[in-house]
Image (cartoon, rainbow, N blue to C red):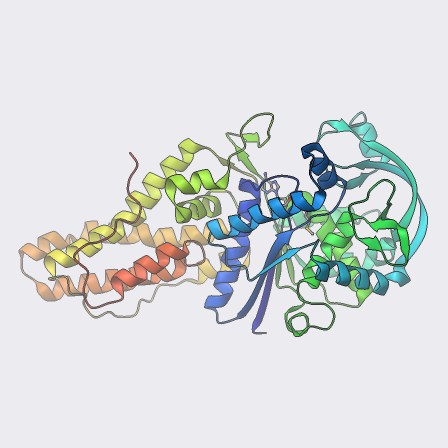
Length: 477
Ligand code: MSP
């Protein structure tokens, strides 16, 4: 069990990355980094979902080819991973020839559960999803997510026998063989199975959708984008023959947004069962990021590019804000004001100041010499449990309790008074405790703030404090 595999969903390439996509990358990154610290071998995969009518439509509107649009936007997602210091070691694109080839192979392996039929129903290209008569009626024929009429489709296509796996998937979730977090989402998912799952349409006629992967043996159809996109989680490992697949599947953690949980908690497990493969061990659905209390949308003009925030406050401040202040079990909000407040109060005043004052007191009272340390005995059980249960916000809060505790320790022990009394042994004792605890904080922060972690550790993991101390989070007001 030394292998650890974590995935994010793969965003569509119809539009540039935003704060929501970035959040998902960050959460996955925290788990990947934590696993590496636990000496696990890690595959961390993300990528882009590049087929379907939605992308084709957008490309046409821009007067470019779908592949050209995909190349451009996929590059932007790749840049985002770099900007945010995301440690993924795989980046899959569904237009990669390897994905296409393997997706076709998977289709063939699923053929025992595939049949041809007539689909009559509704579709929204914005969602790339099918809708039932009841859903369409409840919204007066207009897709509430995209403000455009649902499209009535009547066509021959292929179906996957999802119904056949309904019971088995339900049982796996119920028995926690396949764990879903948070609890509210797990309950929502279980409710989906109340009436049993229905078979799903998994292809579209090429005369309606051109931009997709050909169905093997039927050149008049392309695979439904969601069906083929889910396969990325194993095509990226080189399913079926590659050693990575053999060693790393099943995934330890799959991370997705709350809006696409159904695809990952029902369709995907059923596909895996049909292939005779194990289900992922856990699925975590994060909430949505809003801006100034409103859904991000172009028409509201409140879409913020992650790079604008990073440019202003740095990557670790970005990572900290989104991992700690977007609640792990619900939706959360970004506002510039709140960000500034958090930056100044928590990063500059609490963490930054702790590091700064400790280092400068060592300079002043101990001639810059870092005293020998006793290993700390803090209990980090709560931190680990919070991580295990997908409460990243709480895991960070646990570290912050230590940060605040140490600032208070300084206030209470008053090293400046002891220095006046020339009690060197006592001073050494205090700084020994402080520095060993700070080093532990540095270590615990690594999954969330990797650069800051290195800076903290480098500053104190030596014999002397350098003359010039870098201020970690300079105050902005
Ligand atoms: N292409 C599909 C996923 C296929 S996975 C096999 C897709 N793409 S998406 O670009 O629409 O969304 C990508 C991820 O971003 C999803 O997990 C989605 O929930 C997440 N988010 C999109 N908007 C978001 C917010 N406003 N806030 C947080 N995450 C959100 O769905």
